[in-house]
Length: 352
Picture 1: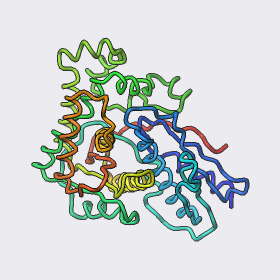
Picture 2: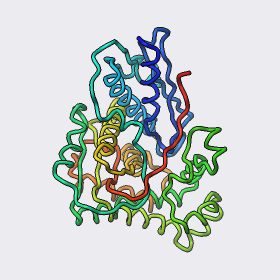
Picture 3: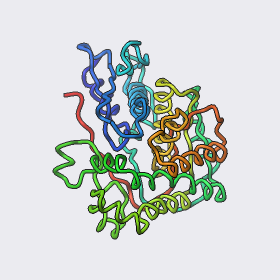
Picture 4: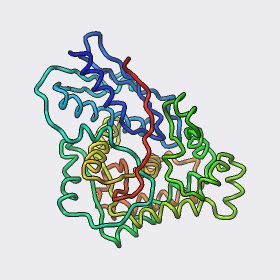
């Protein structure tokens, strides 16, 4: 295989999204550039959300999908095998590259254009054609489904449930600490780490930018919560969801490591297709990961109040989105038109 082609494939691979841009992967290439080995780095994401590495496996699914898309576009056939070593859960995928005909694919340039946009969207009508295209984007993944809601009444109901996670983030010290550990406050931090989230990607208003640095400190947040800080933060998510054109939910059959990897592939395909259609998108994934923990009886250290929040969402979201109870919720999202473009996060170089 051609070294430069493999390099371009890896440049596309690492543009995959991951929780708070932790990039929980190690990518190794064989001497003849014919094999890519993808490994999980468990220490990269020790957040409460990453139960049994589910969040990291979703990120790895997005990496794999980027590789498959880029390989076809650049004239390669990519065959992948998930968890090729049964004794090593960290060895996520073995991907074999062979020469093939180049395939035009509009999703390839979208890999480099895709970004998270947390600003408020402009509500507008979504055409049936776009709904069909987004729904069909996961057809290559047999076990995956995407459910889309653009009816205003249902969007309003969903907003009441989807706001839960943003409130919990500022009511639990451990989740709050992980988030702020991953925020990069200046250009120097961004360039040194090449991971995490620059504060500019958070979609903060002018007033929010003034107070947000103080929210690094748990004592400040704990005090401010007495006056309703966490509720206000939850209400911002509620407002953004209510005023979007489209809410969606990606789900997958099964609940094991393979299912989460395949769910990550589906997530990436939907996100890339939304990018092609000119839509901004924000993932809403913390809540679905908490629901997964609840369903695995792993929310034992949650307060009764927070457990009830997650439990209510676990009951309502499948009904409102029309998802089978037996399926696993991978990621919710909002999509629509927006005046302000989201910022890009940086990536580490895995191929020199």
